[in-house]
Structures are given as C-alpha cells and as structure tokens.
Image (cartoon, rainbow, N blue to C red; front, side):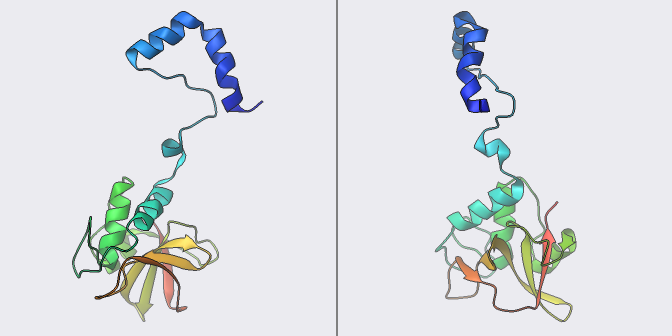
Length: 157
C-alpha cells in the first residue's frame, strides 16, 4: 500500500470530528513519507524550473529579471526564487559554488564557460548535455547543447 493510499485509512482512524476540526482551522493531514511536490523539490530543481519558465525572455546586459536577463542575471534570479542567494557575476558565482566534475554534474548545477582562468558565461545544467541560459545581445533565454569542453561545474550550496 502506498503512502497516498493510506490517507483515507488515516482519515478513518482520525475520525470525522477530527477531520472536520482540521478543515475548520485550515489544517492538513500529513501522511508519513508523503511530501508535497514543492517540499520534495530541491533548490536546484526549483531553480531549473524557474529558468525554463523564462524561455523566450530577451537578453539584456546587466538585467536580473523578471522579464529580461543576462547570463548571470538568469542564474541569480532562478536561484533566488528557489531560496538561494548568489552573487551578481558569473565569476563571483563560480567562486561561491562547490566544484563538481563533469561525471558528477546534476540537473540544476551551474555550468561555467571559461577561457583559461577567466569565467565569461554561466547557465543552469538541464541534463543530457544541455543548459538553460541567456546567451547574448539579440538572443533569448533558451535550452541549448553545451558547445565546448571549456566548462566547469559548480553546485549551489
């Protein structure tokens, strides 16, 4: 029996009066092992969903949303909506994250594009070698395949 199937039997055990009391005060019945989707989603998953929801938003240098973004503005905005604070620039965001290898990367990790030690672009890893990012002037937020091996991965803590 799944946790969701146990909810009716929990209601029966709680009794009609208890259920009515809960309804009257706006309470809810918590079934062990069952979390709402919002509670179950990690900040990384939430940030990824926020970034995806901004698909088609125009790039604007220095913009941090909610309608226009530059690359680090999109990551900052997405993680802020997920309850995490990031610095403003791609380089500062890189310095604030925990390094992860390409093999260990997960959806929601940040992908930092670099030339030597200079970080010049950031996006949010979406899985399957793709990122959500705000690429450049004249372009829009979109899902795109990672086009270079000159990337580092960082996990927001």
